Each structure stands twice: as structure tokens, then as C-alpha cells.
Length: 318
Ligand SMILES: [Mn+2]
Image 1 (cartoon, helix red, strand yellow):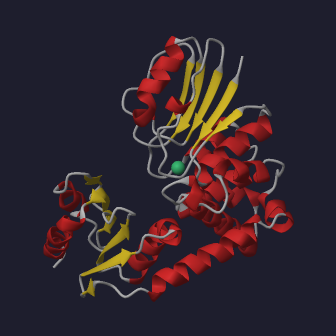
Image 2 (tube, protein in one colour):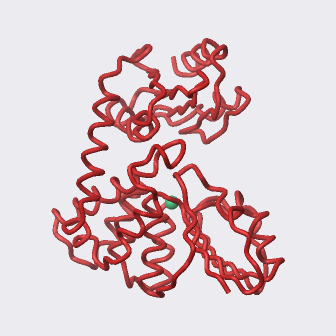
């Protein structure tokens, strides 16, 4: 019998697993990746009697692999907050799935453990940018303002570490980061005793400084577009940079393009925060586009389509 711990490589995934294993220690094979690696269950080949714990990757993206695991006699415990599709009804499937917008996977694990390792759920909620939920979860812990701010920074730092095209782009492989965290009951001790937090904070600031040196391709009162070069720092900072732009210019739509080695682009579009609409329709007009009204993207925009994208973007947000 074998155990597999399968988790998203971001703060929510790591802190979800950490809470569980503090409560129920278990040696397991770790399966994880960059934040965008969400089809993780298919990476294992379980056998009858094996036990899979899956955290913070959508069931919809893993449905086939989960079905196969169940069919071959393995058990699956599943915690997640992303849109799930059909939830299997099976005696060996244990689901903790809640897609409410104010929860993250670590908060679901916290609910399951009745708050036993709440501090790590707070870190994760900050990492998933659920600031209000994090503050609410922290309430009974009576942390002072500085402690709360440190947990916020830690969540952001762990989350930042998960951004990249492949694990080669990351400062720490998420499995290594999890193992660095694993001995710590209290994230405040982790911050103090390990270099990880300072390393990630420093690295994140450097990446952001690179991005902030860039001039936009164009910027008007209603829309701005940036193209980041083909570099590891671009792939890491992309999400954080987009957040910064959105915070600094709430009336403005932003498109951030990251150049791929083949010259095509990964596109992320954020509608203006003051009017969070239109990003989905814009991106769906391109072959590999998708997303939500407020934020959407295109997985691969060929270079010859760039002018068409720019025109459509300007037209959507004029
Ligand atoms: Mn999450």
C-alpha cells in the first residue's frame, strides 16, 4: 500500500497539505508542480489499496485520473475550491469541495481539522489573495498587526514561488518548499528560522523591479499593454505585476504578454477593476483563449496575431 500526496505548488496547496500532515503524519510520495500544473493526478499509477490525497487542483481537470484510481481499487481524499464538475459517488471517494468565492483549499482543510493548524490556513488565504477571509480566520488567534502582516507577506512569498512555465523557473521546487515548511507548527518560527522567506521576498522584489523598468507598448486612460521578454523572471512575476498594475490603475484594463521561446505570447488580460467586464469575450475570439469576465487569457498567441489582439483589446476598452 502506497500513499500519494498530490498538491498544487502554490501557497494554498502547500499549506493545505502541511496542515493535514501536521495532524496526520504520513510518509507519502509528493506530486506537485508549478501553479499552472493542475493535471496532477494522472502523474501517478495507483494500485488497489493505495491512498491518494489531492489538494487544490480542480476535480474537473483530474476527473478521468480520479475515476481510474477508484476503478483500480485506490482510495481518494479530495480537498478543493475550484469548479469541480460532477463529483463521483463512490465509497472510496471522500470529497471536501466547496467553490464559495471566500474559501480556499487550506480553509477547507482547516474546517476539516476544526482549526487545529489555523495559522497555516491564514498564510494560505493571504497567498490566494483572500485577504478578508484570512483576517476573519485569524480573528480568534489574537495576532497583533505586525504578526498578521508577516503572515500576509509569507503567503504572498510562497505563492510567488509557484509562478513559472516549469519548475526550472522557480526558486524552490514546491516539493522542497513543502519539506522545508513541514517541521514547523508555527509559521512565525518558519519565518524566523529558515532563510526561505527572505530569499523569496528579495527575489520577488528583484523580479518586480525588472518589470517596472519596462515601458508599455501603449497606455491610454482606459487601457495599457505590456510585453515581457522570454526570461524566467518574466514568467515568475507576470501575475504579481498584473496585480500591481490593476491596483495602481483601477479605471484601466491591462494586458500583460509574456514572450515564449518560439516567439508566440502567453496573454493575460484584466478588465478595469471599476468595470470588470469583457475579458472573456475578448480572449475567446482567439484559438487558445478562455477565462472569466474580469480576467482572462490566451495560452498561445502566434506573433502574426499580435496586431489583431492589440486592436481587439483597444477596441474592447476604449
Ligand atoms: Mn487555491
